[in-house]
Length: 247
Image (cartoon, rainbow, N blue to C red):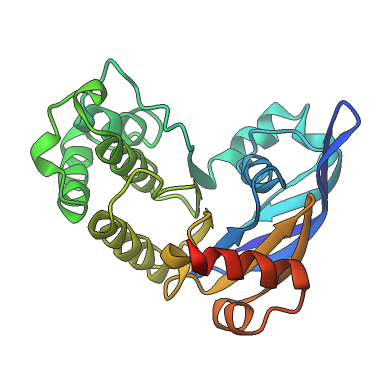
């Protein structure tokens, strides 16, 4: 479950996000869409506890962080960060570790899972995205799409309460995008909450439970995915969706 109240973030008098309010229950997928440069990634970073903010609060499950705490309370931030896993657009895989090593690193050293249990889970996850044959390769030996799938599996392996993804299919072909869709839907159906920033409305269609449209650093509207796609309430959303269907 995620609750955001009055979230605002500025940098050098430039507003990145302003007065964001939303509620998302557990087991649901939220797709965040909108033009580039309107605060979608900033929103994810704040939700992950990786970026301090000036106003508002964020609650994930039974953990909350306020604007005041987001920049100074290391103990509360660490507890808050444990609630979520994030997949960055630039992936940040560990170059010195194999695919298997990347996936089991956090479960073994942070969650204190046994290496045997972590490896078994990693192998099962790798099968779901059809890259089990690459488990002993290093990131530099993989294609962009393969690296992207490894980054997603690395986050899921920690079994976070909330999974945050920034453009998770930018390097994937339609078949592999479908594999990721199925995995994320399965992850949400098991009780986790998923938030996906994506320019691909096609990827979100039929998978996301809700859609939120962001424009000019604001959350313009949020509704069930079906309603927002068929009958958006704001002209800016309609224009964005119209262009999305053309591309």
